[in-house]
Amino acid sequence: MTAPAAPGGAVPAPASPASPAPAPATAGPAVTVSPPAPRRGRALDWRIAFAALSLIWGFSFLLIKVGGEGFAPLQVTLGRLALGTAVLVAALVLRRERFPRGLRTWGHLAVAAFLLNSLPFSLFAYAEETIPSMLAGICNSTTPLFSMVLSLVALSEDRPTRRRAAGLGLGFAGVLTVLGAWQGFSGHDAAGTVMALAASLSYAVGWIYVRRFLSGTGHSSLSMSSAQLTLGTLQLALVTPLFTSMPDSFPMLPVLAVVALGALGTGLAFLLQYGIVAEAGPTVATMVTYLIPVVATAAGVLLLGEPLGWNEPVGAVIVLIGAALAQSRPRPAPPKSS
Image (cartoon, rainbow, N blue to C red; front, side, top):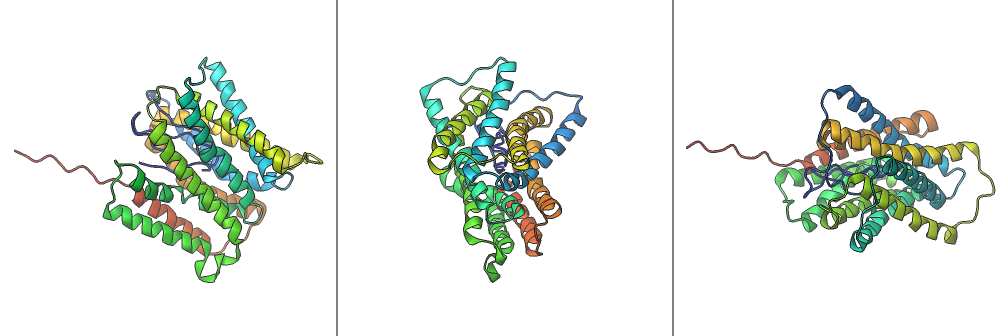
């Protein structure tokens, strides 16, 4: 099953070492190649982590919006990547693991960092200059639709079925509903909306790239993700000074938003998801993606006072139903009796 990318750069939760399934939101540092064996007797723990992860990733879009009130979009993205990297590298040191080795692996990780972190994080930050945070969260939910379309072309193991085709059609009808296509983007800025959708497409391209070139490397997901976020941070550190100048001030609320976005939404979120995969399995872990637009919409409306039309929640539900159908796989035929 191919799951969407998550806002905090979530790591993918693989079905197997040879065929990883990307996880959510504005998501995803790197490929998980060998998840730990599930531990028994701690079901409550993973449920708490699941709820926390849903809130963290859902609130990421609100944090992007608040951070953008004090800093340029690239500065918001650089801050979240740097702080997320710090959390993961600290965890890497505590667990006495090492960065992956091999020049080819690092080259592929650099591409993955661009497609799954640097580019989509920046696009969402730019998009939220002109569109509501809740719309950005809903656009993020289109990632599995883009992923399925691309995987049908690029991955031989994914085959089209009537159910998947119906899911894709339904999902993109939901996108048109969200955008209020009959009334010209429902009053939202077209350029910002396109950037948010382009960010989701970037996640989808990134996960296809990861599945083709970084599956089965033998490195842990923590090692791969730490390296990928490090590379993403370096990419933004080189680019940001070329397009922005040093901020004149550091207002408290935007600073706190960027800190939370990086340390919680990009760093801690990975560790939470890693624990959920270990406790409850990858299928349960990827289900958190479907709660992200719900939390993002509630946060935007209740805390930022963003206007909500009927078409946005209705369209989001249609998108999620379509995504679920598009990702479904046919049940294996029962064995024939002799």
